Structure formats: structure tokens, C-alpha cells
Image 1 (tube, rainbow, N blue to C red):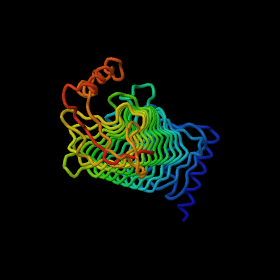
Image 2 (image 1 turned 180 degrees about the vertical axis):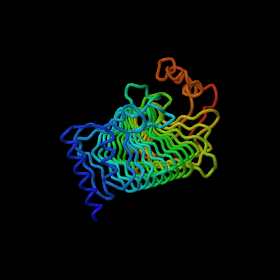
Image 3 (image 1 turned 60 degrees about the vertical axis):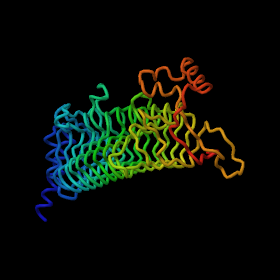
Image 4 (image 1 turned 45 degrees about the vertical axis):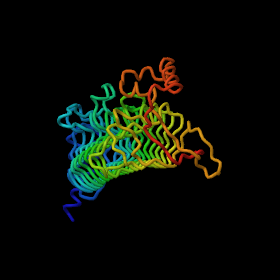
Length: 408
């Protein structure tokens, strides 16, 4: 008990010294951290302190919105190496610039950490969770080195062999990507991600839930690579116009559900390839694809995907395929197609004849990507019109929706 009181007296004395002398030495702040007893709260005096700082005990570190830790361009600004730490209301800036060392704003090598209401700027990587589980990253503002090209910046949030973390309600801009590697059972909810390269990339990260996020003006949206059982729902992805980019892209991932997302004004809405195994199908339901160059793009597809109750409105091309493949083997039903020509004589809300899409001149730009520049040009319009009027060969049907909706 006496030892605990001595600790508290020392903390008070050092805090008073900081307030009186206005010192900003990182050693003084590290000493405050080291002297704070387990379970207690540290509230340093307002000011800018030099990093790096390491927290290796379960304490609450509250900057009150007036404390800055500057890494001075060396390594990671803050390292959390103890379970149960709470860090809030800080500004972390000035990390190192080494990609090999993963220099970041905060490195979390612990479980059950709460990191909230912090600002990270002028850092290479933002939040790096390395083999950490059950952590909460919430209500933070994260940006990288905005003077660099997107490919040379770092990830906003980087998870490596980490599970059951919650990434929630963060404002992320001008970064490279958000990356999860071998990190299953995480949740990414309600974040705003703008002006980056890739909004989210999941690699061998199964059973991740991605919901309620807004992604705007990125080169790519959400990409899942060999990550099974993803649940991607109620996100809004818009204004991604890079020709090689997709709002959502899935490769070799089984039993992935893509539901109730809004995908607007993108080069490609959804890209899907042939699954590794036949049962690796996608469930695509209730999404809105509007004003995209291509709503859905299939390459090397073997079919089997369940595609029901989606809205396809104002897209330049509804469905695109590559090579000799088609999308006929997918299960299409109940989708709304803006360009559907048919009647609903029985008034059940569904068209009386199927919605079918054939390949005409659009095969040119599908097979030769360099001709994408000429999409919608008078030359291709004339070729398309002539092919439809007097086809030189039987056109190829790429898919059919036997039960199209006639109302949104």
C-alpha cells in the first residue's frame, strides 16, 4: 500500500514538473507511463512529446485531445505491448518511413486493447495489429504520407495473424490500403475510406464481416483473395473510375455473401473469377448497381453463383465476360433491369418473358481492352446496329434472367 502511494506521489511530481517547465522530452513521458500503476489513468499535461513511447502495462492513457506524440521520423510512434490497454484522445505523428520495418503510428502486439478518438497523420502505416486479438479500433482519423503517391504510402489498418478485432467508425483518407492477412473473424463496420488505392484487401482471411462502410474515390474497393465466408453487406461504394478497378472483387473465395450494397459510378461493380472448387459460389442479393461502366464482370467463370433481387440501373454494360465463357450457368432470378423490354400482363411484378443479353459489338472491347476508349463512340454504335439488324452469325447469349422484375 505504501509502495502504491509512493508511485502516485512520483507521478504527480513528474506531471507538475512537466506543467511548470513545459518540457517535451520523450524520456519524461515514458517515465510517466512506466510509473503509472496498473489499472490507473495517465493524463499528461497538454503539449507535444517526442516518441517512441512503449506501453507495457494495462493502463488508460488519455491525452484529452491536447497531447501530441511526435516520432521524429524514427520507427513507430507508439507501441502497445500489454493486454487491456486503453489509449484515447491523442495525436500521433511523424513515424519512420521504412516499409520493411512497418513503421506506423501505433503498433499493437496485445489483446483486448481499446484505441479510440485518436488522430494519426504523417505516419507511414496507421494502425498495425500484429498477432493481436479482440482489439477495438474506433472513432479514429487516419491518414498516411499524403505527399507520396498512393502506392508508396502505407496501410491505414494492417492486421497480421489477428482475430476477432473490431475496426469501427474510423475516418480514413489518403492512404494506400487496409490489409488483413491470415486474419479471420474480424469485423470492419461503419468506416469512411476515401482517396486511397485499395479500400480493403483480405488475403486468406475467412469469415470477416464488412458492413456499413462508405468508400469513395479509391482506385479499388473491397478485394477478397482466397478468403472464404466473407459477409459484405450494406456498404456504399462510389466514384471509383479507374479502368482496372472494381468496387468489389472476389477471387477463389467460397460461400461469400454480397448483399444490399450500393455500387454507384464505378468502372466495374463486381468482378468474380472461376472458383477454386465448384462449391465456391457467391450469393449476390439485393444490391444496387447504378451508373457503372460494367455492373458485373466474370472471367474464367464456371457458374453456380446465386444472383437474385438486384437492381441494375443506368449501367453502360450490365454483364461482361471474357474468352469463351458465359454467365449462363449462374442462377439469375428476380433482378430489375432498366433496359428490359417486356410486359407484366398478370400484374405479379415480374416480366412475362425472360431478360436475355447477347454479345454484339461489345465483344470487341471485352477481348481487346485497348478498345475500351471507343465504347459508346459512333463507330461502335454503327457496328452494333448492323450486327443486330443483319447478324453475320448467331449472336452468343451470355446470360438469361427467367424472372425479371419490372419495378424497382
